[in-house]
Image (cartoon, rainbow, N blue to C red; front, side, top):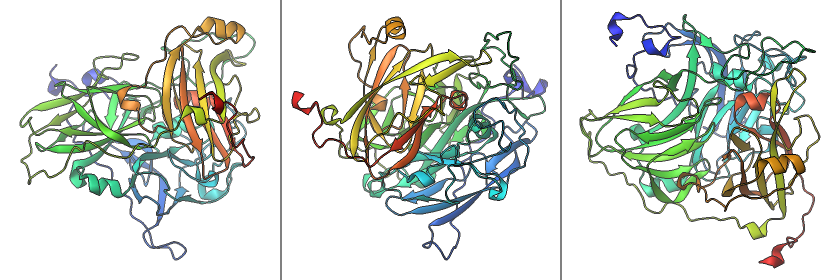
Length: 539
């Protein structure tokens, strides 16, 4: 195709030339002086309506961004040093994306509400960004869980790649598509000791998919169009606009640019990769089939570097990798997407690396073998084991609604872990799709996945396994806060509830599912658990 002879239509990926725009590294947030907080610890970040150019051949697009940028500015924090952030809502009173007023908490509340969740953070509940801690412009109205204007992040956890994004009740999917997402890089002393690539050679990559209208504005569906046709009963008309089962874009963005290009030197680079999409998963590999050195997962460094061919990321999952371009001078390498769920010729490519820059100096960075001493959780120490089914039903309009534990969001809390207890959760997926399950507050380990007889479980509640346990994939053996609950399998995870009590949540990180009640409360309580786990004598 000769792109020079064909006008670019943002709505038609066949007309959009790839690898034209240079990848942009998000700006770094700068602290502000505030006499109430220690020097260099306080930040103010504004949520603003602004204009953004996603591709050099697109017109400017209206977005909502943190400090008006997409992605938002990267907050850099240090382990055990508290960071204070005030996120100021300066957004318009009307949303520019279609709102479904039938969803929980939307019909009788302000149209534009925001709250920021620092995803993966060990944080007190008042600063967690609870979906009912929302607030409007200038805090004119606030949600029932709102407690304070300034988020306090104590950073009592290992260094890792976190991200902050909107989490407002019933609006998360729209606010994130509008642009409200950014990186939060928590650093610790391990990084310097390990001599990892840094500075210009450390680049966060936020991967998202989007669709656009012909005028370059963001497209978001208002009706139940394919690929999700659903039965509609006669008795109730379908809300319009209505929530869909998932927003799947026809273009791929990295750091706010459509199919960008990154010119690199023939040396090692560190990439912190985040799937920030609403619904799409990615299976990433290099087009030259070279190995990727993985050094971290959602929660921080692995015990040892793993050499991987590819890595699967469902929404909200992160991976920390080093790619060595030393042997590929003057070559072009494409970051591919082999995920098959919504595959096409356009979305199976992410971005291009061109190894065409001269080496500026000796590359003294390392790909370490050993990274972080292993801190394991043992299943026989668990105080509580929870069987948590992932189920489906129809709502009052006949729309498919996915649920956790067969309960809706507003039902009373059933997950009430005790402080300083270890729990094992069995995520029993009876639905026909996988789900990225995110648990607030904790980092967990994946123990296994195991196939089971779905029909028997749905009919009689009996859990009958149909195959042996499956080990977690090589790329997901570290600390995690989001896990892929596979179709027809029980996904077993283990976690330690420590340091904080209060109200948190767990949910599917397909944002359309989350907004349509695939979210449940967690209440961490001080009540004592048995000193000796009841089944510890079995080991």
